[in-house]
Length: 251
Ligand code: 13P
Image 1 (tube, rainbow, N blue to C red):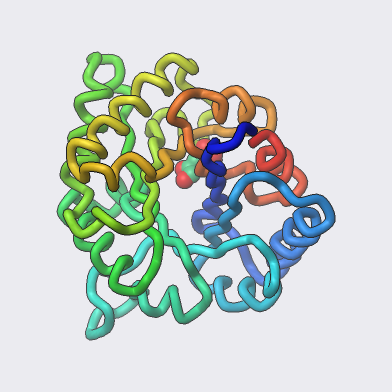
Image 2 (cartoon, rainbow, N blue to C red):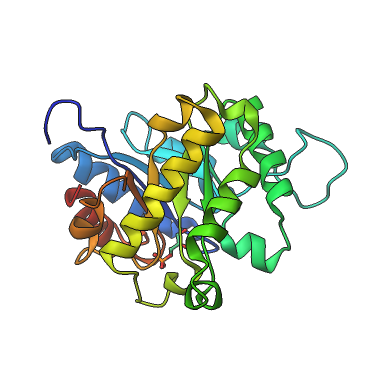
């Protein structure tokens, strides 16, 4: 790393995986990092049910915790939902918003995502806003236009002077073992950067743009070296401390 190189942000997304025994994995990760610090800024987003206990397990550790979604209201009659202040209260600093599994499985629109980003900012959380194209869109040659459209529509103006990240996660690369070429990743990340600057001015220059989708110990170093890749959003390979630490060390 040279002087002025921004620290990579690498975040594990456990999705709907993890019961109480999984806290030991988080604890093991915390201990590995304490024994041998990594250059990256590290986040873990377990299921909401584990955040408070994980915060306790990882007290004093450099690992930051996050939620995987939040409601756009702070409180109220919304049975089953978790609000941004609740995540912050449980010990979260980050929150993943607009993941394709929420957009596709729960019908979340860009406008819904933007409203959730506002809620996250009100609660002092740092949102990680996900975008990414389907295989059909990529094969039609529309990936860059689609993804930059999502960026423009999912980011509220209020992000201007706030800390946030964008995650580029091609839907067809998630959980499949497939990844775009490094050139394709570079092309999309450069386009996202341009869209961020166009949308937010100088505020759009600093935000890390993470890559997500089958990031593994074996491909992390190459992907993280691509221009404008500011880190990673890691699903399956973040569930075991022994795998995740290898990705963190690649940064
Ligand atoms: P995988 O790393 O399991 O492909 O998941 C990526 C992802 O969706 C992270 O948010």
